[in-house]
Image (cartoon, rainbow, N blue to C red):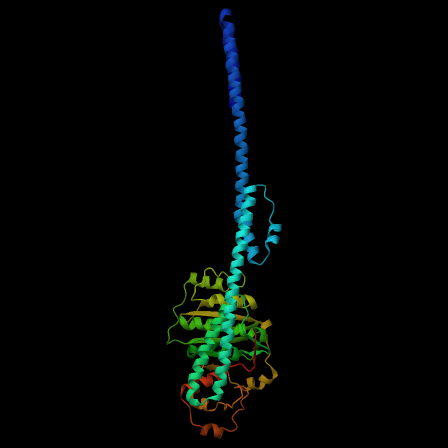
Length: 424
């Protein structure tokens, strides 16, 4: 723009000088032509100045739109999606959104908010349907378990092994239904009214996996888990034990170590499997993190374990860490906070004091141990059965080596002493 103005000035000066240097008879035509040329040049300069101002205005507007769109994409739209997924209403979210000077940005925000709201409603409806289905399966498995356990006391030894196998399979189906309920935000079907001792929690977790015979417990812990969290802790440990058993050789054992500290109880589930690469360990850490929200989009249809562990860990503030195991596999460290740990019930204290430290191979009980099991009476639960009266009577009983003996011995250790309450 300055160059155009300078050119006009220089052209005018030169034209005046040229007219003065010419003869008087030609001076007037030269001045007239110079004035016309100068006027045209001034008009061109003015038009150029107007166009330059318009271009500057368009450039400023483009920069403003670009800045607003960048803020829209990087900040506003993710915030809208996050707030709607957290459960905020669309009116609340709209009130939190700042006003937009650009009409297009406002329309984009409005359209995006509407689509997110529709998708969230569809997702909530889908999750509610899944939770309803999981609740029905939970009710069915709970009823089946009650019927099977009543039949275990009613029928003879010839069918006891088969009944206990069905009991164990139904427990695994119940765990799967509980996993779906956890992922959909529903409640699990069992509630414990009293604290559950740690040994019963561990054995209850063992009883929910198929490879329970490969799990070895190493525990001297006499503490108990509060009743409202016992079921979730049991479920979390069952998922970790199941993963450890699935990703290790069938001939390898899964070792579970328990240590009681002032800050809570630490449970270590260790296997001798194939191990995990560093990026896989990081992905597993993120899946069970208590800070990052769950992401079910990347969830595989057959691998629900880590997602379930992450949900339960976030619910009760359990810390779950993955690390390499000295045995070649993976060690999972679970820290149960002190807020979930309490003393066992008074009626369980004598039993705990007389009990030896746990360091055995789950349900593999010798025939003499199976023979010392309490006699089941019709109408009685296993925990209510009277203990054997004399050692002589136990030794004279014929040893049982069938599946019923092994399963009944395992069930005696697995079932907690406190009856659960079933939630609808």
